[in-house]
Length: 388
Image 1 (cartoon, rainbow, N blue to C red):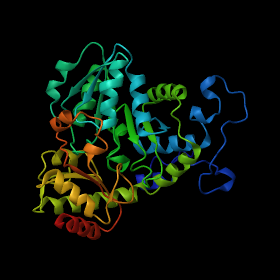
Image 2 (cartoon, rainbow, N blue to C red):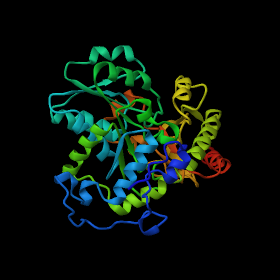
Image 3 (cartoon, rainbow, N blue to C red):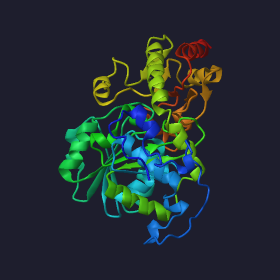
């Protein structure tokens, strides 16, 4: 049974102690890997109660669920095989054929593909909304509208929409509010406590933080998480117990990593913003950016991701990425190493080029996910590459 006395502790302490088995399993300080596909039957009633890896109820899953729910200020949580497994399963449960979904424009590429192609193929109508213009949402709302979906910070432009208005709009109209809070992490923003019904994470990123696990998370109101869990039981997107343990271990340093990444990203963004070769920097931590005040009000930190464009466009971006030494050219984000990528070739490669440009993702846009290196070394690496 998980320990339940950690509510009064701050997040740094909860990361270590929330959800841990009590008493400890055979006295083990670290969570053991329960690498067994099935468990001896103990009289469980009903299909979803049977102890089985695919049903998300091994000791490794349950410990993670308790810890994640506590961190987000949620009633319940669920881990999945990937961030897209979390997003797709949640949406498939919340909106059914004949329903209508309102979803933020300028989405992560995988989510954009799912809601613009697969959901309509399954009879769900989708309308995109401008999260900076709450007054325009009511006109797109229909009797069949069931949910509104947003991102805490958009990928890769780091836009911060009116999240408070999204929560209020959903409550006024009886909609389910969903948010992808991956870029913020619970260290910077606890979306369930803020009022969102369903909170989604790609745990591949900050929650695990070591670039060695692909995983997803669903947190939120218990009845919704239970429904999403039952759908996942049938779809099969379950996290392996060994991956559960790696995620469990990685989360314990989440606060240390994210606070360092907040500081490093801010220093790098400010440096690039003043660099003569850089045309534009996208980062909510820059005081000059239009959504900075909103981000400062919502978040405890501005995150470890930024993006920028160079005066020389695509050619300059490719030269820059070729000449970095510390920064690794690779997709994904949130790990301990600094990564650079062009979203047009990775996270948003599946979006039509004209649509990418419409939402502000040029071919020469470079996204940076800072790691936990020394800020001076990363800045020097970027300066060296920019001088090339």
